[in-house]
Image 1 (cartoon, rainbow, N blue to C red):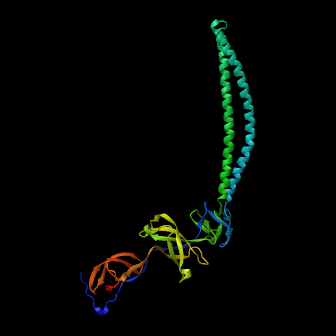
Image 2 (image 1 turned 90 degrees about the vertical axis):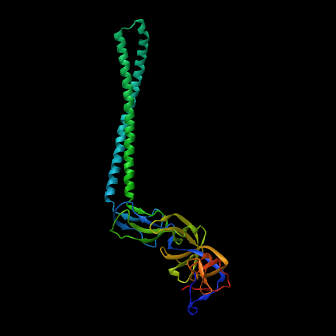
Image 3 (image 1 turned 180 degrees about the horizontal axis):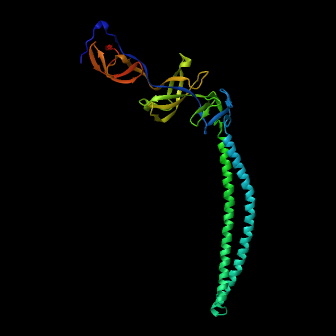
Length: 350
């Protein structure tokens, strides 16, 4: 195919030999290490905020107090029930002791009656005991056996009742105390409180974010990479980073973690990276733009992308369209592998 170009208005150039770097664009924000958002596990009115932004937080420290009058009453009722069960347990223990005595007495009587029964059973064939007397002895033995088994069963039931009552009331108290403690929102980690997102008197739910906490002076990059570029990204790759807060400055980082699942809404993958030499001051949620270096090639024959037609043709001799094979490319230039030499002139297509 021939393309006609006027010589006066056609830009021309020769390929250049130099370095070219292929990279993948990513955007994201600065995050504190182990940064997390605090949520409550219960709903209610926020009664007291016990911390302020910028404060150093210890693990387990109370951050918020949610109104818990009903929970307090429930806990108190559970405590009273537990105390009452302890008092009742002493009564049941006395009953158990009494029943153990009855079991022993029933056992002793059973041993005697069983002995009499076995003896009369052995001599019955010699007709030295009447049938009526034998039946009386047999009945006495069977009654003793039944009474003993009944006493053993009652003793077992009393012990089970005591155990169940104690466990039930103890568990109810623990559950109530745990439920009440949920009205105190505590920090899961030590770090710095970056922000408080609610005000006292607010009706909060378990889905409402309350605060943001992270490690103090430890920051990382959280970047989003397009799904089309993700296959090129591996751990340890160098990243060139720019920040709006540090205009004109470039920082270097390395890929530290790749999350192996795509966000279906943004069609991106999340990666984390650490600065080689971080800026003097960083804050959570600062915006960042990055180029992940895939590979760099020296002494490559390159031309501007604007001189390439359909990713495989260039114009030579002003109007001749020639097919070329391309290699690496960045945002401005593309490497020519075949079809063009350094001394040839190419023309910019209109």
